[in-house]
Image (cartoon, rainbow, N blue to C red; front, top):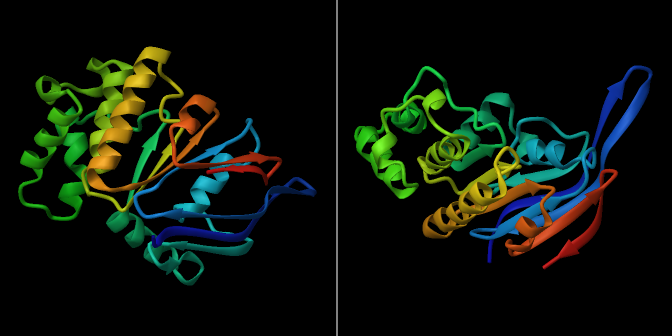
Length: 225
C-alpha cells in the first residue's frame, strides 16, 4: 500500500528567550493511503506542532516530510498552500466556522474557491450526510457545538481530500456528542477513502484507528499497529 505521508527523522526547535526549546526530536513514521492514524500524548508533547509540520503549515529544522508524493522541503509557502488546497482537509477543536456565513455557505467555501459550479448542491448533500439538512440556513451562533463540528466535518470533506488532519476534533464536546462526531468522522473517512490523521489525548479514540504513535517530550515513546 502506497504512503500518503512519510515523516523521516523530523526535528523542530523554537527559540524561547535565550534558550532553544526542542519540541520534536527525530520523529519517523508513515501513513498509508486510506489509513487512520492517531498521534497521542500529554499536553506539551509536540502533537499539534507535529500535525502542523505534516500539513505544511510550518517548516522543519531537520528531517523530511513527504505529503502526497511531494517533499514539503522542496516547496515554498505558495507551493505548500496549493498542495493543501488540492489534497488536504482540516478539522479543529474550535470548529473555525465563519460566523457571518450560514452552515451551507461555510461548507461550500472550499468548493467555490476551486470554481466548482454545482457547489451549493454538493454542500447540501454533505450537510444531509452529517444530519443537518434542515439546518443549512442557520448561522454558527444558532447551532450547538456538536452541530458546528458536523458543519466543519462537511466542509473538511467537501474537496474530497486525500488526507484529513483532525486536531482534538471532540475536545470541546461532551462525551455523548463527541462519540457521535467520532463515528461520523470515521464513516465519512471510509466512504471517501481518505487517510485520517488525528491528534488527540483521548486513548479510546486512538484505539479506533489503524495505527498510533505516542509522543512524550517530542520523541516517539510507543508505536501501536
